[in-house]
Image 1: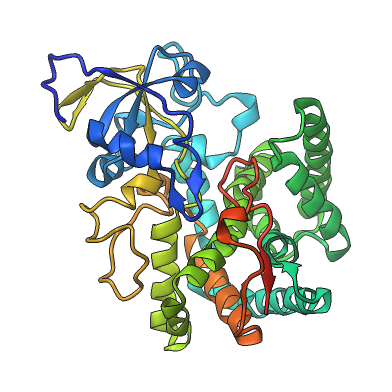
Image 2: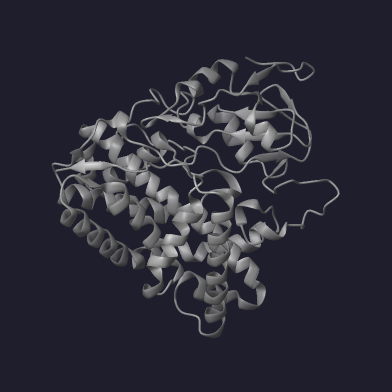
Amino acid sequence: MSHGIDEVAHLVPEPANYLLRTNCDPHKDNFDLLANGPLFKLVGDASAQLGRDYVWQASGYEVVRRILGDYENFTTRPQFTQEKSAAHVEAQFVGQISTYDPPEHTRLRKMLTPEFTVRRIRRMEPAIQGLINDRLDMLEAEGPPADLQGLFADPVGALALCELLGIPRDDRTEFVRRIRRNADLSRGLKARAADSAAFNRYLDNLIAKQRKDPDDGLLGSIVAEHGDNISDEELKGLCTALILGGVETVAGMIGFGVLALLENPDQIRLLFDGQDKADRVVNELVRYLSPVQGPNPRLAIKDVEIDGQLIRAGDYVLCSVLMANRDEALTPNPNVLDANRPAVSDVGFGHGIHYCVGAALARSMLRMAYQTLWERFPGLRLAVPIGEVKYRSAFIDCPDQVPVTW
């Protein structure tokens, strides 16, 4: 459905379940919304939370990719107002690179990028493989049935981040516990605020130590290379951004990936047909699952025409990565998991200047996790029907438990 730019697009009520899933798939409400076209106005909780009469919902691949790639017309800065300078960042978002525009975004991104080179990732792989092996030892010791999410998927993502940041080993258990508790939206705001305060105090102390004696972790490396050009608050914000963007995403991808592969067992053997095929399995799972349903809302800073619609300055746009990756404009039969399909430029890790800086590391971790899991447990299977798997209340889609046997 397309409208001329002088017409008013009709408002679509927000379905109750469109942010939910049916197992590994988008909820039916997502598919029903596609009848309104790739870009339309949505009214409901999302618009109320953003203080608008409506928000634009982008679900088509081409529209989503264009908006995510257009930093000249759209900003990720929260509550942008024309009265504030382009350099203004609210205190709680300092250092969180996903909320920055150029040139400040460019400055921080250049500091982060060297920490995610292929060489750096290769150097981390033995430590990550050790983490994976240790967690699978614990899964085996638990004996079937066991919760793969709690014993394997959750710890691997969190402990790998600890390795990346340079969190001391003695601190990692408490560090991870704080991350999990703070991300649990089922807990009250007061309880989460207390965890957040304790977590921030820990980061303050960690940054102070790195300023004094930097190690070769990500924080230490940035301090050693750029210490005079980055503030403590920016360092803390970068850590927070990596935690928010990395821990639950990897945990969700491992958990959902296992569910998807168990539902499509013909794809499992491809994990062992060489690294190229294994990488294609991971890429296809990222496209198919998209645990980050949507990135930060985009706020139009100018009037802009997209898909025949006039998005006015001050309008918010929500981009559904989940549905863009299930669009036939991206690939034929998008609702089928098929690692043999030709390579596609999906938006599972975003697009444009906010493309996930740790995407290559995440892919490497996922490949190692899936391969080692099935090497150890070739007879792995769900211990309950897939419809009984529960999902947690969090910022990123993730199974709460994945009961398995072997």
